[in-house]
Length: 488
Image (cartoon, rainbow, N blue to C red; front, top):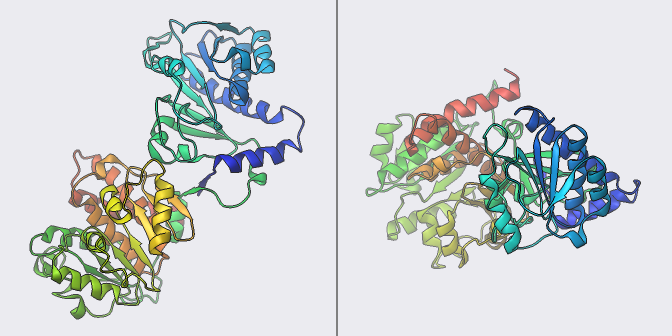
């Protein structure tokens, strides 16, 4: 698991650590790590010696990191030029080190560059780039290096112009190929449009870990987390002890939603899937192992319910939703079930002790919360989770999972390939299966989003993706991920 920390937590940790170290130690650690990554990039493209390196240098410590890293590259034979965007507030010691190493300052953009370091602003900045810096950032894509290739852009700590604590991009910002960050990840590295601008993120250890306090802003799961959480049958397991998931989705008008959500459930860890709804004949035809009935009341015993995808919004759909919510079981609500919640008639039904998970996309979120997620998607998801006293899985390229207690996760496996009709139905079924198998709701949501993202990527290898492709890809990606736990 990786963790991302807010600026205030980072500042507090830096202050505590610097009190135990000689002056300038943290900056030198950061500059050394930054220079090392730049060396690797240049070595892969002709070497450091003779390379053209261009520094965009702002004020403060971020500019100091950039200047010291530039000095290290200059001592290795690179031709290093620095454009000072705030000459009256430049880091003087860093500038002196650059000049002593043979680097120099310039007043204009160079004609060519192999590598550009974005040290315009760091984690203390707010808002987009100012017009002069934005104009410069807009030209970087046109710079070419010694072999005619586009100059690689390395952001120092964060791409300049992004909102560090939310991942929003409120104005003009730098687009980086690589971001070298120091001490810990920040939210802008893992969530929102800023994460896309960051490119490949590399974390440099400067000793900050021991001084970070409290809970991280965001947690990011890895394959080992998912494999470790995933329920596995034991030698004494049977289809009932593995869990039975109930799926109340689809309708005569939308039978495909039922088929797809059941497909997701069948790929999960439970031992049985019970379907309840008017599309039961279509479901059994597609999935012969499923036990089907026309109503939730007739479904039989289950350990969790999935409700909503293609259910419709008529009185029959409302009755099915109310029946599901009346059970003392974990419930996942998706799609039409969320629409049925908007008018407030189910407010009393939502006051339940059992776990609740909802999986809105942005439009559904806006109808439920009264406003779009906005620039702070993590904060918005957390607020809604607190309001409904349930887990919110806010869909998107970087899907967010938020709990009522304030814990938040972001999924790293998302892909635009999943922006296809019915993909969310598959996700809902898989998540419901994890709930029925006994996984806590936040882990079920995180694990389902992770595997769903991998399945989308696998499906995209064959061309344009449809929801059945995603469902078909679930089993192989789940199998491959779980093999990591056993070391096979």
